[in-house]
Length: 265
Image (tube, rainbow, N blue to C red; front, top):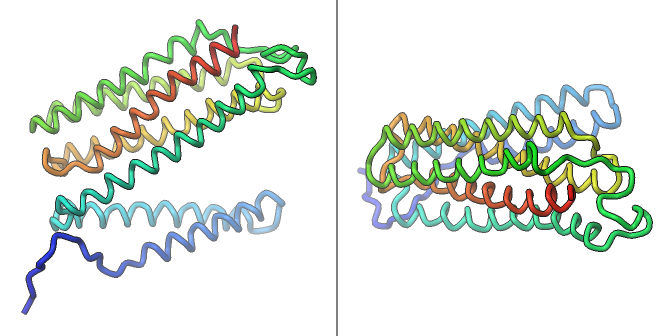
């Protein structure tokens, strides 16, 4: 006889994925150290660790989707957990990028004699902010508008429009990433060129990495929307992707002003 559940919480079944993910992370860390130093077998262990992590991510999220979408375990109360958890995660990302902006402003607002007393440092070539950086800046906010369109379509129960909006979001994101690659190809400086090169490469590089992660996030949401997983009552995964994408949009504006424009004038 199966007892009925008298509460709205989800008691998760035992799962092998936490320990498999931990073993994969351990293998990746040890393999990475061995590869960098270079020990025999380091590259093999690093590759196996990364494969193990990716496999764990896939099967764990597969189980979460099954539990939430097909088995109905994610009630209104359970959905609060992922929502509240997404907020401090995004705040931590904001603090991380703020540290990079702070490193740049520390040297740009009061240049020391070691870098020539000017910003950018003497002898360092910079990108013209009026060219590709300026062209690339409106693209991410435009994709943010598209993901907002997708959100309103989901709330209105218009599944096809939500899919179209997510496709537009992903296409704009890919265009932005392509322009970012062109920037690096044409950049007259590298990460090893003084404090300017270090802060420029770290700030723009990590923002580009966040764009790639957000693009993958949006692609998965588009696939799930096409398969009918997202409804107007239950679309927490999409909300997390939308919040993350808006964070990426806003950071791009600060990036243009503080890194490209201030560093290129």
